[in-house]
Amino acid sequence: MLTKKLTKLLKKAFIEAGYDSKYGEVVVSGRPDLCQFQCNGAMPAAKEYKKAPFIISDDVIEKLLSFEETKQYIKVAKTIKPGFINMTLTDECLIKNTTELGESNRLGIESTDTPSTIIIDYGGPNIAKPLHVGHLRTAIIGESIKRLFKFLGYNVIGDIHLGDWGLQMGMIISEIHRNQPTLPYFDSEFTGEYPIEPPFNLADLEEIYPRVSAKSKEDEQVYNEAKTATFELQQGNKGYLALWQHIMNVSLIDVKKNYQRLNVDFDLWYGESNSQQYIEPAVKVLKDNGSLYKSDGAMVVDVAKDDDKKEIPPLIIYKSDGSVIYGTTDLATIYQRMQDYNPSHILYVVDSRQANHFTQVFRCAEDNKLVPRSTSLEHIGFGTMNGKDGKPFKTRAGGTLRLSDLIDLVEGNAKTKIETNAKERGFTPNADEIESISKVVGLATLKYADLSNYRMKDYVFDLDKFSSFEGKTGPYILYSTVRIKNIIRKLESAGFNKGELLIPASQVERDILLKLDGFNNVLQMAARDRAPNVICEYVYELATLMSTFYHMHHILNEENQARKASWYTLLTYVLSTLINGLDILGITIPEKM
Ligand code: ARG
Image (tube, rainbow, N blue to C red; front, side, top):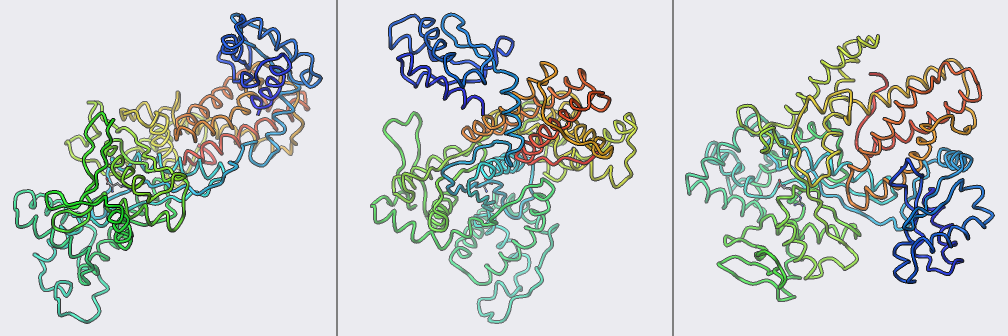
């Protein structure tokens, strides 16, 4: 890590020149045309020492250049007024550094020195409703953040936190009761074994929920029956629980299929229902603290603070009918997670529109010491994926687009492109290959487009743009990576061997060496801000440098064998970096495309 090594040198130089070492921080240059690295510490130091910044930077540079070790590192160090210290490294230093990174088994990526447990709560689909576009971003962003922290050495647990304990379950149960009242689930005298076969299939289920949900809005009795059924389910009514299990089983098959298509995987398939047994102990804490009180028949906890800019209403723990709701299960889940995993962080990757809910839940948990100070609860919000009209993406007819239809759409689009593009390049995949490549490219299209926007931003779904083989897109990055694989494959099959890195043959090769060194920094930044878009930007820049490189140099035709062997080595480093970067984004790379 060059910035680290340079910072160490600069700090030493600041001290020896009589200044505080804190000013010695070195960063990658903002003006790569002028220098590779810079230290801007002389400007703030000037205030403290009441001197002109360039006097300080000159002092520091004088010391810096007097160190023996500097000679191996630094080719040029000079002051640029008012007091920037601009530095460019020797090529020898770059090569040595790249070789070290390339030969280390993790590309020089630092693991955390505090490998605590982090729970990532993402996905969060509600059972019995088909997954739709609204479930896309949490899945993609959550998966990437999970992979990132895993890569950095944390013990990460991804939990899907299914919505499986709320009113929608009561609605379905009461609707089935109305339609099939003779089923044993509704017979309180029934003592036998409930049937193994569910009394409905997925298609039935998907039709039941919207029907009863619409009815309940018009018919108060339907609504009340749903509420009662929800309450009884939560109280442990045996028949309802058995029916609930059927709903879960049938629904989960489809849920799993969707996540599998997204290449998103959870360590825990828990849901709101799993928190049921922790509600009592969690509520006891609230009671013992004197936080829980009755308000309009409901039981609530105040979470407002004096300096709130907007009103934060109390968190409802029990509704007036005694049933628990979203906030209650979230609170109980915090209790459960602390007990089972004692995490340092719980990150909730959930739509920004739920910000108030999380403010309420987190305050309630923190104020009542359900979590220690050392555990941080964080809402990792995100914006919406919009249509060209600027509103959340819909079908042409204005309905909610199913997630599976969206995936079909991008895969279909990728397929058409692969068929034409492959032909142009003389690659003739068979039908199976086309099928599997389209899946991988389709998913990369979707994921890269989503992740490359800073998560808090809304973005417009523009398939033509996202699926282009040029520009900042998934297909472009994949194609660049596959191209490296192709060259390596050719070198391999010609029996060629990798060799030592040589002094870079061009500026672009030097830029690639510097870029490879930046990977660690990029991952640390992405983790700090919970922002995978930084990694998207990085892989794009690296891929673009490679395409400039091919314009300048022809690896396979290179006559200087040592040079060719050096480029071979460099290619393998670039490839590993891209593979790791893309893997953190949850993007798979095809062998060919
Ligand atoms: N099921 C919720 C919804 O559809 C999302 C769950 C998010 N996670 C959580 N712990 N609240 O809105």
